[in-house]
Structure formats: structure tokens, C-alpha cells
Length: 620
Image (cartoon, rainbow, N blue to C red):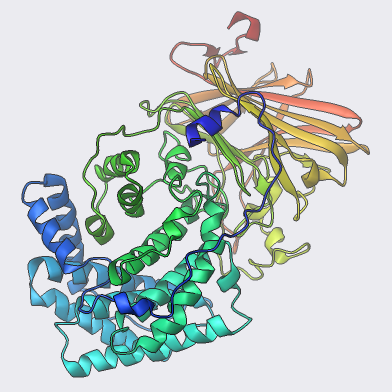
């Protein structure tokens, strides 16, 4: 069944339970896998044959030429950059590893494209510097993995420029600071990422594999120890893309996980001539749809799971890799569209895919992503930056980087994000990663239910172990999804359902919650917004932002009215300056209770008058 057909099957009858995708096995790595190792350097990601092809193509391809000019301009900036220094931020050296990685890719590609030695010389300086560090901080193993990636690529790409002594110095640093801790990680029980379903898996396995394959002709023992372990480990995370490409950690972490998926598999392909059938894992071919569908017309993502504040769609070269790997022109064209207003990075050149005979966006206005974290997105169209967009998530609160936000929604209309998620807070806050019940993570405002667009019962957060799932949905002139949130509120309710629907030909949105309470309880409906809020005598609330307006109206219960409170917090937490909460507070409720709120943007066709509130529904 095609992805499109599977989504259409959701019409009026989509019922599923939350499911954890079981890992599948990759092709076993044969004992003699290094017999196919490309003998010469460079062998990783960008072979000499591929580079020659790209140079020829650039003579008649203006887009490719512009992208390489972007890379060379970036490399020129790195020529004057200060030397890298061993400086941790909290427990992390990660910002240094990433800085090295960016420098090596830009400088290395600039040298290989232009032949100008100043780029190679600067790349080698950076390699020697980091290989002289005392360590690459294996206690936070992402740091070690990303630095192994950087040094592996650098060693491979500028191999012919380095003299024998420098090669030996860089290789020794790669082995002692990257490969040895890597082998220890695969042998030890403490390195949870080897069994992880999340981004650490792809980053660590791919980064170490790239480092090992860079030196495999002279020191094969490291590749022999690392590559089979990495290939066996990767499916635990790659299976998380199933069944249709969604990523549990949200769109922002999708990019981190997926670019390292691309780095690792591409390294296997270019150096060994095989991908160990990793590209056949269910969901990976479809995953390019996830960032496309979860980007609203404002350019902002449906923001969940520790995405950064106002996380937006930005260039992602792994879209070119997906386009090339699965011959999907939509992915390539969507990425070219983003690059019209942004700079390309080296991987856009490495995996360059010209525009293909395909649309720039999907035809479906609505999409329902299945998997451990389910996502539904509805929009009024694809070509209007002022159009309506609403997205909502289900899933489970213990997902990596998760917040207590089951049922959270975000809303775009008229070029404005009206209902928003605040995003992550500072990762270095004390106890930020303590996600068990009573963990300090759940004391921070941005991670708690009360900062999200979800209901509260008795003012309490959702259950930290709760799971939720879509129970119904449809798509047509308007679109609808229902989520069973009962497990999130089990202390006070036998049943909690949230329904979100577009209405009146996708001009507005209704959020309806149904409760079967087991004890008398206060109910709070909340929405986080940057808008200024005016409460009217008729009970409506008018939100104004960027010279646009939206009217919120309580449809149920009759006579209920809104209140407004601030979302601002005190340091060391994020301040959230100017952010407000639109609240519907219902004290001492019991039995069956329904709340329904209409969120109606004030369009130019004047379906809503901000002076008098919403026109009665029967008159629409």
C-alpha cells in the first residue's frame, strides 16, 4: 500500500494504538567486508570520480555553481578563524566538535574544488589542533563521535596534502581519542546509545564508522571492530522511521538523526560499495515527507520534543541524499526551494541532485503520520504563505527529548503563528534529563503541561508515563483528528478525548475536549501565544499580532469566558518575554464535561469581525 493510500484509509475510520516499532536486522557484515575497501583516498562520501563529475556538471548548472560558491565563501571565512580550543560548555565539548566538522567540510571541499593549498593548510591546522586535545570528551559520547567524523573526513580528504609525519600525528589522535573509546563503548554495558532508538544511535555509529573507514587500509582492526557493531546497532534507530517516515524526537531532531543516517550509509557505499541493506528499512524512503509536512506556511516547524524556540525549516542536505537514494524528485525540489533564500553547505554539493520532474510540494493538504509518536497536520493549501495550518501530536511522554504535551497543537494563519510551543530550555539546567516521575526535568516551565496547548485537570501535569494515540480522523473539505488522552489524566478521569478540526472550508479551527471525570476537579484549557490579547464583554478574546487578528470564542460550555496570564519566568529558566497564556478556567467540574473553543482568524473576507466577535456559526 502506498503512503498516500494509507493516509486516505484514515478517512473516518483511523483507529490505532501506540506501537513501538521493533528493530529489524541489517544485512550481516561478512568477515572479509574490507576486501571491497576502496584502496585510495579520498574514499568517504565524495570520491574523486564524483568530484570530477560535479565539476563538469557545474559548467552548465548555475545552481550547482552557486552552491559551491556558497561553500567557498564559508571556507574563506574559516581561513581567518581563531584556532579551536578545548573548552567545555557544561558537560559538553560538542560545540567544538561541530565547529571542527563545519571547518573540515568547507575547507576540504574548497581545496578539492579549487586546488588552492591555503584551504588544505588550514584544514590540516585544525586537524592537528584537535588531535592534540587531551580527549574528545567520551563521557558525553556525541562529542567523541562528531569529532571522529570530522577528523576521519579530514584525514581522508587532505591525505595527499599531508606529509607522512602529519598523517601519523592525525591518525594517532583519531585512534587514541576516537577509535579506542569507540571500541570500549561497543564492548561495555554503560553506553546505552548502542541500543538506542534515537539520534545518539545514528550520530555515534556513523561518526565512529567514518573515522574507522578513513584509516582502514593501514589500520584495519578499528574498522573490523567498529563497522559490524555499527551496522548491527543502526536498525534499532532506523526502524523508528517506520512505518511512514515520522521521527519521534520531532522535526528539528529529525535533521540531526537523518543527516547522520546519510553520512553513515553514504560512507559505507563510497568506501565499501555496499549499504548492508540499511536503505531498505521501512519508513526511511518516506521520511523526507516529515519535515515538509510539519513545516507551516510561516516556515516554523510543528515544534515538539526539545526543538529550539521558533524552530524553522532550514537547508538540510540530507534531503538531496534521500532524493538520490530513493529517486524522489519531491525531496530534491523542496530543498532547492529552501535554498533560494539560504546558503548551501558542503553536503549540498556532495549529494547534489538537480531539480527533477516532480512538484515542489505534496498534493495532500492533510497528513497523518503513524508510529510511536503520531502527528496530524492540516493546511488550507501549499502555495499561500498566509494560509491556515494546524498540527497536533500524540505519542508518549517518555520519548527522548519529550515534554508533557500529549495533544499539543500549533496554529498558523495569515503569516502568523498564533498557538505556539515554547521549545526547549537550557540543556545545562540542573536535572534537565531526569525524566522519571518526580524528576527535576518536570519542574521546568517549558517542559511542563502548563506551558503547552493542552488541558490541565486540577492544575497538574500530565502523567509522565502516559501514552496516547489517534482514535479517529478524516480528510476532505475540512479535516479532523481525535486523540485519546485518557492515560495522561488517569488520576482524575476515566476518559479524556481531544478533537481538532478545521472548519468552514479551512478558515478556522475548533479544539474540543471531552472529559469523564471521576472526581470533582478544576479544568483549565490553555493556549500559548505571542499575541496581545483583549477580552471582550461578549466573552470572546481578540488576539493581535503583526497587524493581524484572531478571535477566540468559547462554544462550550455556554457562558464560559477566557482569562489571560503571563508565561514569563525567572532565570535561570528561559524568560519567555512577552508570551501570554489564553485560558479557559472551569472550577469544580464533575461528571461529563465538554469544552470547545473556536479559533477564527480575521481573514480579508470578513467572516470574523474583531469589533463584535465571531459571526454566529449558522450565518457562515
